[in-house]
Each structure stands twice: as structure tokens, then as C-alpha cells.
Length: 194
Image (cartoon, rainbow, N blue to C red):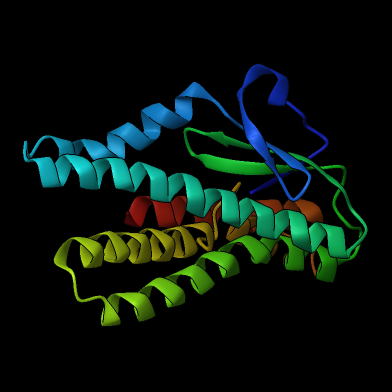
């Protein structure tokens, strides 16, 4: 997800800098990640406890790569990224602005999910050739997490990348209020189906 012109990194824990972009994490991210890892931890074995911790590490890495892809696409359009922030629902890249043109907006919005699709392909290929059981479980986890992030972010719901990209495309052909309504109704339909 991208958020232009909203820098809140000063209230988050700074993790470091990647490609010249500061990366920070809110405590809420850990709560969200722990919620996802809890079913593994509750099984009570060392293997599932380690796998739960690997899930959190995989989420951090995959979401950071997703947001770096947004930042890289933005940079290709001459737009700076002031930071990446991880939070309970994932993360966002803090961009100075979004391009005015539809093509640029859509390219930036879809760069993140496409990065997760590329990671999915990498880990799927690696999982096929991994002989060790523990390694293959961790690689399969990374594969599944990245496919989940790819599919989830393409849902036509706001504020997800898919919903925002669809909105940017619709605004080219219909009034903004109609685009808002269409994406809103689609988002409600998806939420109702899930």
C-alpha cells in the first residue's frame, strides 16, 4: 500500500534503512503478526514454535519487499519515498506524491503485489528442490505467505492496492463519485463473500 505525503515514522520503532529508505515498525504490527502465528505456537511443539517465529520473519521480509517495490516504481516516475512503515494490517510506503497520470498510478500500485508474485515464484521453485523437511516447510511457508500477500493486495477493496488501482482506472471513464461508489460496492461484496 502507498500513502502519499503522510509521514508517521517518528512514532514508530526504526528498524534501519534499505536503499536509502528508512523502515519503521509500529507495535501493532507485532500484535497482528503474533495473531497469525498463534495457531502454530498453540500446537506446543518446538518445530511449530520455530515455524511461528519464521512466519513473523517472513511477513516482515515480504511486506518490506512489497513496499520497496512501490518505492522503486515511484522512483522510476521521479517520486521520492520518505519511508516504509509496518503496521497491524501490513505496511505502506510514504511517497511524496502520486503521479497525475493513470498509468503511473497503476504501475506504482501494482508493483508491490507483483513483487510478492515474483517472491512466490522464487520460493515455489525452491520448495520443489529442497530436500530437508525443515527447510522445505520454511520455504513452503514463505511461498504461501507471498501468494497470500499477492492475492490479498489485488482484492478490489479500498485501501488495498487492487482497489486503488481499479479506482484510478475507473476515474478515467466515469466521475470520481461513481468510481468511489463502484469500488466501495465491490469492496463490500468481497467482504460479504469472505
